[in-house]
Image (tube, rainbow, N blue to C red; front, side, top):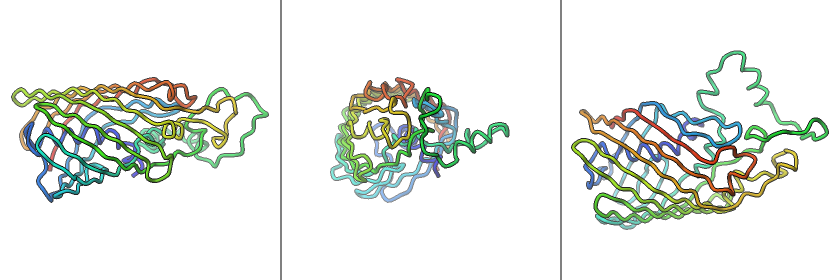
Length: 292
C-alpha cells in the first residue's frame, strides 16, 4: 500500500490522460455516468527523486480507477464534486493527498528485493534512532534517512477548467485541510492536443506555486530532525515550471500505446535545502495501457 502511495504523482499525470485518449474521442465526455472504470498501464519508466538519499520512483505497473456520478466523482485518489459542467468550461471542488510526501517513502521493490549483502545496512537504517551526538566526527551531509518523518497532508481544492478547441486550461488552488503543514498550492496549466488518425500528441505547460509553509514542512531542516545545527534551513515559497510531452496511439480491444516525458524545475527556496541535491524532476514512461 505504501508503494502505491509513492506512485500517486505518476498515476495522476499518466493514467488520467490514458483514459481520456483510449475511451473517447478528443472532444467527447470520457466516462459514462454512475459507472466504475478500471485500467492498468504496463511499461518502463521512472520519476527522478531530487532528495539526498532518495530513490527514483519506478513506473512499471500503474493502476487506474475512476467513477463519475451526476456530480460527484472519484479519480485516482481525488474525490470531488462538479458544481458546474458545460462543454467548454467547468468548476469542481475536491480532496486529494499532497504528493510531496511521495519522495520521502522508503517502501518500494528496489528497497525490498535486495541482495543479501545489503540487508544489514537496511536493518541499521530501520533501527530506532538514537539521541543525536555532536561530539564525534563532524556530520558531512544530511539525507531523508536522517530527518524526522514527513506526513501526508489532505488537500482541499477548487479547480476551474476552460476548453477551447483542441486545448484545455486549468487553474487550481489547494489548501491543507489536515493541519499537517497549513500550506497552499496554486497550479496554472495549459495543454494543447493534435490528432492524426489514431495518433494523439499533446504538449503541456504548467506553473506551480507552493507556499513557504508547505515547502518548509517537507524540505526545511530544524531541531526536530536531530542533525547538526549547521544544516538547519528555512525553506521558502516559489514557482516551479513544468513542461510535458505525450504521444498516444489507439489500438484494438481497448489497448493504447502510451509515451510521456516531463521536466519540472524546482525553485531556489527548495533546492537550497540540504535535503535537496537536484534542481529538476524528470519523468519518463513508455508502455501499453488497457481499459477494462
